Every structure is written in structure tokens, then in C-alpha cells.
Image (cartoon, rainbow, N blue to C red; front, side):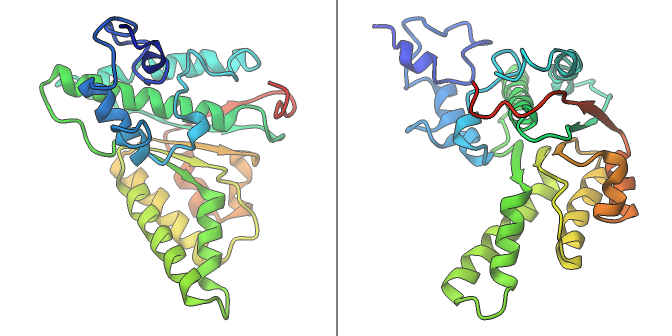
Length: 256
């Protein structure tokens, strides 16, 4: 029996030739590798992508219809991913800065879809080269949530049972974000950040730029204003090899 529900819940449903065939089921090694046995683990789970974005690709992204101009650039960008996993690859993937003044224009949706495209390209590229795919080739860093953890263990008189887990999550996320091959840093233009938090964020960005690791940033702050939100050093690091894509219009949240 064909397990259609499985095919519709696998990130490989578009490139996989076995999708919707009799061999497409939850025992598929590729499904388990990417989604885990229960559908909530694997490489997708390790990436930290919010559940509502885990099945998105650039092709099925709900933001595509409203952001046609931006998606022309996005399409060209993700089309280069497959070449990165060829043995003679020598062209680095650039970083992206997805910007709109208004929230809810599809930046986060698009960033997650791009991240998933990179994961697919990495997995298929690893198979073609008969190599083991990385356990975590991509990671989604919610900068607001990360700052919330920072505040949770740095405020005075915070109970240890609250501060300790927050600190552990915070530094674990920082370690991953500094070294993962492909990162989404969602909502980079956070305000009212302390010098210590700015320093940690700068360490992530500086480390990634130095190592030539691509990052997709989303923000409601223009790239040219990051020097005032953070500092000139952070701005200089982000704009290095970074392409800005403007998302137009007003918030579409609650309308889809």
C-alpha cells in the first residue's frame, strides 16, 4: 500500500524519485536520517527549525506569491547549492540579508525554506559521493529566543533552576551557530542588547565570516543601520560577501 501521508511529510518529497511509490514508507532510510523514526528528529530536528517551517522548500513557500521579485534572487541562490557538494567545488556560498521594514512579510518563512534546500542539497550530495551526511549541516538560530535565554541567566535573583538550563541552552546554541556549515540567524536586528550579548553575537558572526561559512540573516533593520543598533564592527562583518534582498509590502500574518 502506498503511504501518501508519509510522502507528504518528507522533506525529500520533491527531489525523491520514490515519493508516492510503494517503497515510500516510514522505514525509508532517507526519511529516518532526515526526520527520525518518529518524524520529529533526524537532521531536521537537530537543525532547530520551528515545526511550522520544517516541510518548507523554496518551491512551496507561501511567501513566494507575494515576494516574486525577492524569489527570483532566492531561486538563483539555491540553484548553486548542489554544486557545493561536488568534489571540484571552489565557489563559496554567499550570505543573504533578508530585510523589510514591516514584520510578517515572509522573511523567516523564506530563510527556513532556504535552510531546508541547503540540507537537501547536502544530503543528496553526500549520497552521490558515498559519504556520510553531517549530523547537523544546518542550524536555525532565533536571535530573540537566544537573547531571552541570555537575560534569564544574567538577571539578578534568578532561581538556579531557571538560570542553569537557560545558560546551558544559550552556550550550546552559540557553539553550534559559530561552526555549523549553514546558519539562519533570524531577527538579527534585536534592540536593547547589552554589551555582553552584542559581544557574543559578534563572536558568532566574526567566526563565520572568517571561516567563510554562509549565513542567512533576517531583520526589520536595514543593513546600513546595524552599525547603530550594534556597532560598526558587526556591520562590517555582516556586509562582507552578503547580498541584501528586500521584502516588500505589509504583514501577511493571519491572512494565509
